Image (spheres, rainbow, N blue to C red):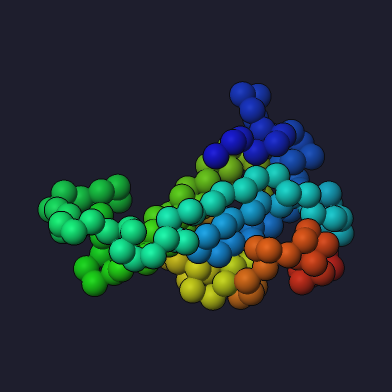
Length: 161
């Protein structure tokens, strides 16, 4: 994923550091917006896609079962027992989104966050956000708005971000 505008080797700019951020996400897409101020318009800064979620279950799995004996990151198995490949794809995407938010917070670019996600995906995000990033969440909205314009998304948020 490309770096957040306003961040780089020297770190986030003062304006970006103080600005509220909005994540709008579902199983297939995540969009990160930065507000021009507490009452300002949203400007899209980054996007992530999960193309695997669009595939049919049969296209995601092979005929032969995988080996789950080796743990993957954070000590968990590669595929949760009983999970479909689509569920695994959504969980992996949620982890990638949360890793990006963690990196932004660690780099000083994320001081306040508003989450908008479809209900199932919001649950995945809640499970995977680290405690320090979770404390930055000011608003959670259970809606699927990834295909809406920045103006429509802004209208769903509190007047003052």
